[in-house]
Image 1: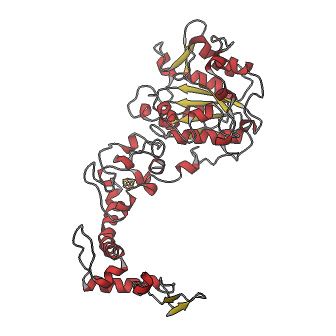
Image 2: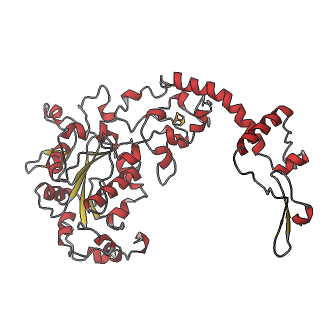
Image 3: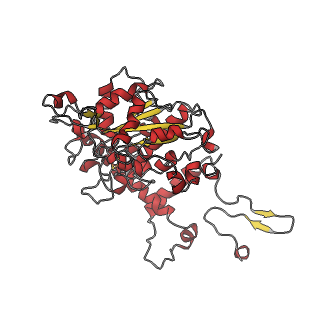
Length: 439
Ligand code: SF4
């Protein structure tokens, strides 16, 4: 069933007054969810056994950029997931330290219910930001990142929440390069011992559904890469889709198995060996620092938001922000990668031969066949020079090759007569029909 034809969900139908109704706003959203009448979901969402999935967002050493980019996702959008708009995808109840309207005890109660196994619904854990080594902070009685506190006021590190929630989670999803590989907080010289979710939970970790950690990298990641991955995992959870394909590092393979360069809007310039010398030039950016040929990311084909924007599309170089080695292995960002000495020199050499040949072909394909016959181009915009004998000779052989063993455009029969008496003269490519037939 098409999502757009589905009847509105109960959440969409209810007015804000009805929603507020008898709800005790001091209870947590997870508790309120447990009080909802079962089966109140719309028809489309009833596909599959799971109707509701809780998503527990944890933030470590993060700038909240991942959260910001996910709010811009469109395919699907966060709203699609929250109201259960996608057929077969369970409705998501999101618990997020920045976007949730609850605060204090009511907000933390959501996390406690899951940690105590009282949620009565499956949940996924989403971790944003890198994981600091809390043992280092504890040496001086402090902490790096925390959320909530114990009975005796003492902040609870988000790493503790991750340890509590990860074993029971249907899936643990690391979002953004800080969570997937350590990212900027884990760069050389950091005092926090920052690491990724994989580094923290270890190789042996498997979710309650048997999944290793799912990694959606990017600094910040493409929001759609995240929401699409979540939707694919939830479809799998509901028994309505196959387990999505992940690569050996837990990245969604269909999103990260190609390089930036393979889909870049400037790749044609690279192939012809023409390169930008400064920012703002339209050509390939590799000689001013682009790492696109070795970076796995789909930003050039997917864009930043709603297929718009994205680094190279808007003039920026690729600094490898989706890669485990980021940032140190791609620094300094302003210098050309050493590999370009070989690759761009090769492109330049090949391009200097191929480029002029292509321009000759382009010149011929830029002409109506009629203009060749009349030896002039009736353009009022400017003079279009006639190709010289050398170019014409080259193009003659080019066309011979083009049509070798292939049908030529035009009619090969001298004359064709239809039942009603209409006659068509034989016309070859580059010739005009007789004037009486043009009338
Ligand atoms: Fe490749 Fe970067 Fe050049 Fe694009 S700008 S073609 S990604 S090297």
